[in-house]
Length: 332
Ligand code: NAD
Ligand code: UD1
Image (cartoon, rainbow, N blue to C red; front, side):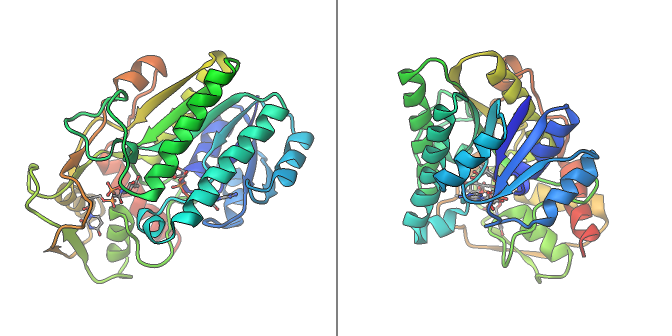
């Protein structure tokens, strides 16, 4: 089976390509390197010892995308390509609506034209907004608090409408919680430019002496130690969830959303302390004001993914901390 992976040289996409190859799928990647680099293609091939087909280009470019579908007989698509920075989306909403919606609509039109109606889409736990209770199940009310999140929710609606119009579609919407960590080889991982917004990339840069100290955003939340609690998931577990989702869409028509998390919540300080212990390195931090828009706690119910996809996360926060730091050490 041949899978088109849009955004396949990005953080989650690259790990998913490795898992696809490991499971004997053929992989075709499309990426415009907006947030990744060309050397990732070789690293995916080095890890898997297999070749991928790579096309550099923009998923919003219909003629380009049609060319890819003409050359390759695609059986199903995993659609990662998109912009993902919450803060930037508040400042540049049109950029986010244009890229995230345009890329998806263009892709779906081309898929329809070529009779390829199986897709796995990267959504986010951000579509649950500020949940009323925990753990979060897939039937919770959906609402968003920023343009990035709104693009994800709008795309979920587009996919649901598409299925209503044509029951031949098979669509899996994956709502990721907080992916962290890296491939154990240290060859691929997450390396944001500039000052990171997310917790683990920030911790890693402090550990690597690129930044002085971590600011912990608030210690007066209603949680185990007052700092924010999230459901961190190892990116390799997340990638494996995509294999199960692809197997599902190759088998069954329909449209369904699944949480991909571990079901466990860890606080900021629990994560920082584990990182220091596992890696034997100090991460200086100070407690500062809350970050606006943050919530106390967020973690998934993973029952649906366990039951319907036969998937569950296997790696714990120790492995997440170890592999995140290993990636940085290997790429110094
Ligand atoms: P990433 O930025 O590392 O990867 C996205 C890739 O898509 C990049 O390689 C980028 O160059 C490419 N891209 C963007 N727009 C494109 C376009 N128009 N045409 C071609 N390529 C394009 O991000 P990631 O962390 O791997 O996330 C992948 C997907 O998962 C995104 O849709 C993101 O919104 C979603 N998601 C990520 C997280 C997270 O914490 N990382 C959480 C929830 C959801
Ligand atoms: C954020 C996004 C979410 C996205 C996810 C990707 C928001 C509102 N949500 O989630 O849409 O899917 O990233 O991983 O931006 N923290 C610190 N210091 C830091 C950075 C973070 O204390 O320097 C704390 C935060 O307050 C939070 C926790 O660490 O309690 C996790 O933060 P972060 O990694 O940014 O993820 P989320 O906010 O959960």
